[in-house]
Image (cartoon, rainbow, N blue to C red; front, side, top):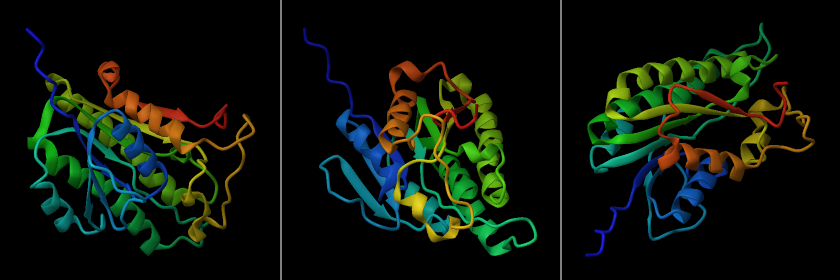
Length: 231
């Protein structure tokens, strides 16, 4: 008797319109995942297994509402983000608040709203940054990214009895449109010791591993992928 076909895994993914988020979407689609993408802009191309929902992550009420009709979820990936840089003495409350809402509060709203829909053994992956360890001129951004680890470790402890993992991927400078945002002009990226930028596809490969069957024993961790910049 033939084995019954396995159900298609379902991932909810933010930042699907470009950069690391789009690279993760492509990696998961190539593995047969069904992906629901949440972003303000549409993904670059359509795919039979990709559903796009236009959502502003800064709108917590709309974001929570969007989660209500997504069905069962096997993976939650929060990859959306942006950077505004400034030195101490010139920090913007508006910029800091906006980054907190997109990086931290949106992740909280998503995980909280989707909890009843997460299968046992599901995965949560948040895309942080190596800058979470601190970097001159990027304190407000670093504060939001460092907050992700405390949040993920708390979730990991709460969800471990259900076999649900929660981790942070912390890339260094990655070759995406994010790298050229005007808001980070006062703190340009530097090449890491390997002599090149991290590639979005490399971050996507790590995310796919953490979301996959062999990632089930890794939880509550921040995995840095920085090309040696932390050495």
